[in-house]
Amino acid sequence: MGKVAVGAAVVCAAAVCAAAALVVRHRMKSSGKWAQALSILREFEEKCGTPISKLKQVADAMTVEMHAGLASEGGSKLKMIISYVDNLPTGDEKGLFYALDLGGTNFRVLRVHLGGKEHRVVKQEFEEVSIPPHLMTGSSDALFDFIASALAKFVATESDGLHFSPDRQRELGFTFSFPVRQTSISSGTLIKWTKGFSIDDTVGQDVVGELTKAMERVGLDMRVTALVNDTIGTLAGGRYHNPDVVAAVILGTGTNAAYVERAHAIPKWHGLLPKSGDMVINMEWGNFRSSHLPLTEYDEALDAESLNPGEQIFEKIISGMYLGEIVRRVLCKMAEEAAFFGDTVPAKLKIPFILRTPHMSAMHHDTSPDLKIVAAKLKDILEISNSSLKMRKVIVELCDIVASRGARLSAAGIVGILKKIGRDTVKDGEKQKSVVSLDGGLYEHYTKFRTSMENTLVELLGEVSNNIVIEHSNDGSGIGAALLAASHSQYTEADES
Image (spheres, rainbow, N blue to C red):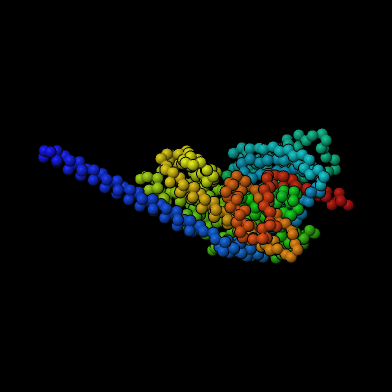
């Protein structure tokens, strides 16, 4: 072989060696990055840990905060609002009742015909109405006139067989899902608007008074007999179908809980004790916080950047509004510090709330061998088209960590309520069932969240869990308000006498 050929061979061998070294370095670098990404995931998993011992501490802390909130106004992060609902539906209710469910940019009007124990809900009809955007920031009169007109139009569609006797006023249950300081079963002053509404002249006013004046202006003879929020509506709807219902929890975009308390166990209640001996308490449990909650740097950053820093901490780790955002924040750190998605951080990944909980749920439930739903979501939402199967598996695991923590903490909250009302133990010879009504999109549609929550209740309660039932109460906020109008009707006692 000539000198030139030998020289070429040496150069070629050197090039091969250099290329091989580059591959090795690249592999080492990428395996180093991969190890770093996994270490971020493992650290997050550890911080999110919810062993049974910790969940029991959370449940105990919930019970302690409930006691404190019932003892005095402002005594706890839990508001423990007295709802003035002292009679829940029994199933005996008869007659025609209306409901108005105002909780956002749409409202619903409902008509429910109740037939007593034998016939239950004979018929229900409803209509949904969109509120024009200009009315959400206009005047109080304009908004309530619009609502009252829609209600009057709906009343005009009553069928012939359902007309009221001239001496009987129509009655309405009003679900109003904005912060209200309740002053009686049928009155409450608006503390502040949320959800895009901003009407200054309603703040501090009795919302039932505003609606009543508007109904008078449009010539509608109707009386609001119950003002409630959606969680209490869910409790009423649940109790109507099952007399063992003791509490209601909403797990949706936001979260809240309400339950039936003994009136004499409410030190801050200064009125006469209701005849029923019971009082429904609206806990506003989204605002619960405790040193036992497993919070991470991602939760703290999310809270600091939110519209209400320091508030609604429990809600921010268990509800549908936030779960997808927590996943995004962890992925962002993995992208920035471990080049998880390659050398550049995907631009879309930096947008807060771009990854919504339904997206997270779809990825978490992906059972295809190559996780093609995860790949599709990454491509469609975050414009990441070159994901590997290994990467997609990590994302499913991350979804599982976030959902499990939320689900298990929700279960601990429920156990806290059961503990407060003495339903967390089995008394000798007692077979009493305690039913919790659940509603909300997170509970209804995120199967792995629901299953994890229900399994955790069994873990926490042991044999007592045989007496605890979780029941889905669909559309409690609408029909529940009509049922509460019926159970607080001005005619009930007259009818019975």
